[in-house]
Length: 100
Image (cartoon, rainbow, N blue to C red; front, side):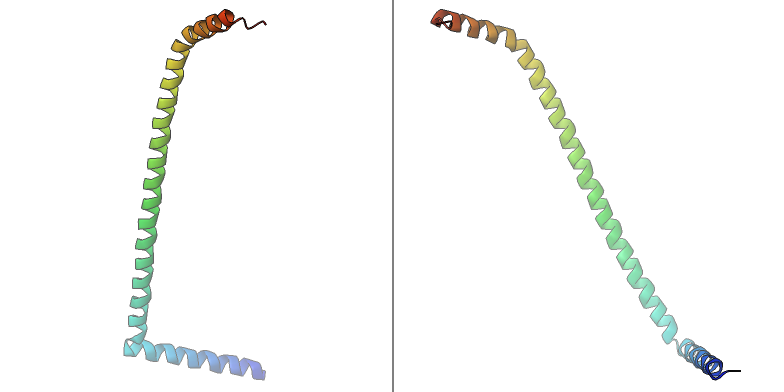
């Protein structure tokens, strides 16, 4: 067995012993609980932010639909008024002698 194999084995045994000692003292469990609790808090924050983004996107879509309806109504109304406005403008220009 080469020297580096011995040191790898010794390091692994020492790490296993340290983990076993931490597990027996409950420190490993408390650490795992703390890490899991932190991850759950992060998950809750991400979920809340994701919901906020989705709500804002829904608001933007609703406003865009509202604006599209307004624009369509204005366009329809202008198309009703345009012939009369053109007649009035034509009469006014003709009366003023536009060709001169």
